[in-house]
Image (cartoon, rainbow, N blue to C red; front, side):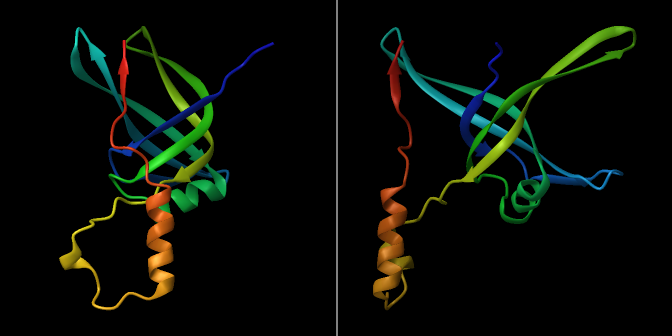
Length: 143
């Protein structure tokens, strides 16, 4: 039995790059940064890891259409290792092949001076829902 699943949340480090292959399939390449905050020897430590993600089909088209550098996403998928030779030396790289990409809500500026003069109840409800799904800035884990 083999298991190859990955779930990761991060922010795009660049705009998505869309390609249409000769076969007619579409692939979108994403690069995400995942921030890990933990305590080491009593000090808060930040660790950033970067991951390349390939997204296929209609999901790829939606990523290219709606995402830009800095957007937060959650990727569900699997790991895939590419292997090749360069100058006679074996090379390898691990990428994530996405089965699903979830777009996270953009951070809102809660500065009241930027709020519209009149806000409808629908707008207030949308804002309340957005705040409810807002994720914490950083969670510190003891290590």
